[in-house]
Image (cartoon, rainbow over all chains, first blue to last red):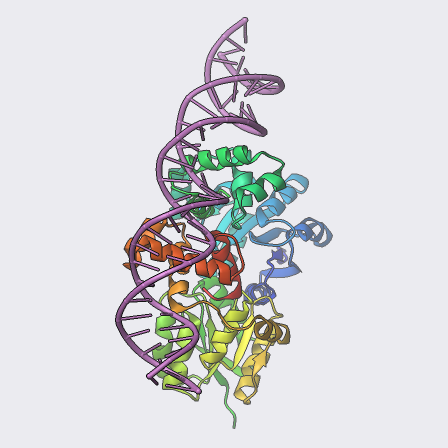
Length: 204
Length: 204
DNA sequence: ACCGCCGGATGACAAATGTCATGCGCACGG
DNA sequence: CCGTGCGCATGACATTTGTCATCCGGCGGT
């Protein structure tokens, strides 16, 4: 018995998505039964195709692969989840795990690890890059509060305090306070650096 | 006769690179004869494998795919060049063309266009997304001077004026002047926005 | 009941940033 | 040879940003 493993591929760049499908297609125990380009289409597609393993990119329109993973995990806990990402940000790993992911792969790992990971998670194993796991543990949890994160995210595009205040329905002073505490927590010297560091760590 | 088309693949993320190789491998008139992960390894690999078409990602360590394209075009003008990128930035298209590229593809185009493009450039055609071409023409050329671009690029990580001045061997005032003119040319209100816009346009 | 933390706000102050006028030397095109 | 634009610099100025002290109400622990 042991029919093929049914895989869903979620990735917004079609060229990459179809290339990954071609790659997995070379394995004869794996079959890509569905492809989606948006995070918010994942759950429905998983349901519709009786998927064994969902392969989720993080950066996607609609919602992130992490958010999608959380939804699938809540609704269909038996589906295995592999999170795939361009950026090996420790904070991403942390939130992926909290969302119920079974594997976390970075796109600059060898291609062979992809099919490997699919088989392993189906066998109940977890697949995590040990270096990244160490980094995630070493760096500790996100020190920012919800509000601080929100304000920092909004400030990322270069908006001024006045714009931020208007957009978030806060006073300018409050915006500055939040940014100030964020800057201190991240041990940097201005909002631009704060944004950069928070991004790098996957805290944004 | 017409043996297979010899292709070189340059892309830093191995999973994507090997997936693209798998994709091209499905075409029986195309053969991936070499793969590199760095821009500065492209020229040697092209030489070593008698490549017909080089497929170059832009974002790579060593040097960008555009820079690599320029070098190959200079040294081996008969080799066809396909530039592949995640970001459809008009400025990228412009510089790719100036570097001698024959095709410009974005990764969220359908996968079928990849093999298509390889065949077309070999037949002497140019392959460019018409929407992007229009955007590139509409937006005009990069208005920033060399120095302005340099300072803006250095400012992108959130460095302060003092740090920029030290790094670039300029006075703080001069740094501020350059950033100020850049801000005006880009019609934005602060350096952070200037960085963002310049990035989006591919001017940075 | 009390402490601590979060969200939210104000006001005062210092430092960084953005603007503008102005000046100099150099290169390049007409 | 003259104008223009660039690179580089100063100084003065207004605005924005970052810091700090202080305040309030609410909520979760102990």
